[in-house]
Image (cartoon, rainbow, N blue to C red; front, side):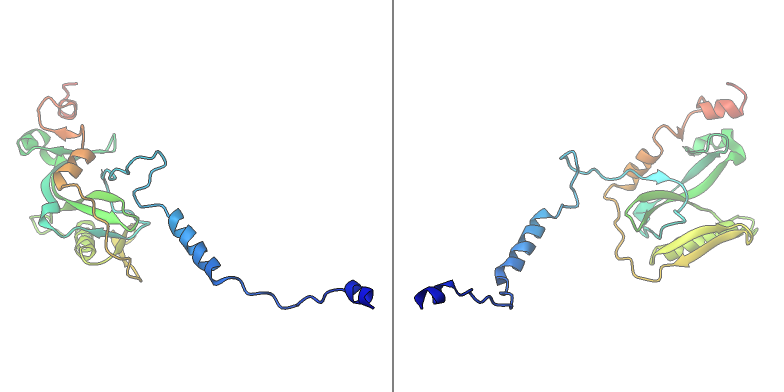
Length: 207
């Protein structure tokens, strides 16, 4: 009789036993330890600030423009259509450059990915002649001081088309560099401050 009782199969419960409450907590603790800091670099060093470039607003990303006067720099710019380069020129070079030099205000912009860019805000024509490219760009820059906008050229309309972001994209990540530092980086080797500059020698036929 005792052998029969010993040989009977043990009943197993079909109900799963609950996991310990601490298992989920331990998982979160492990994940928090795996999160990389924003300053992480694969080389183990510190991520340096991005250098700004000069150009147009990115038509594929929403952008903001810094409203502060400390990030406005009015100067002469020269667009070399052949090389695609833009130069800054000192005021005393205007007599050598003529109509090739254009007065613009350099502004700091940043897109929603945190990439800084310097853009040129044009002066309005002092004669009062209407230029929709210039006026629509200035309007876009004014809007971008307070909200996220995207700008692209509308060739058929002869002006820039402005799109406002449907959602709040948060506070822009402005670079910590001063405007002087940003300009020095963006225009390194592209400043015309002498009549012997290669660009001036070229347009005067002194190459």
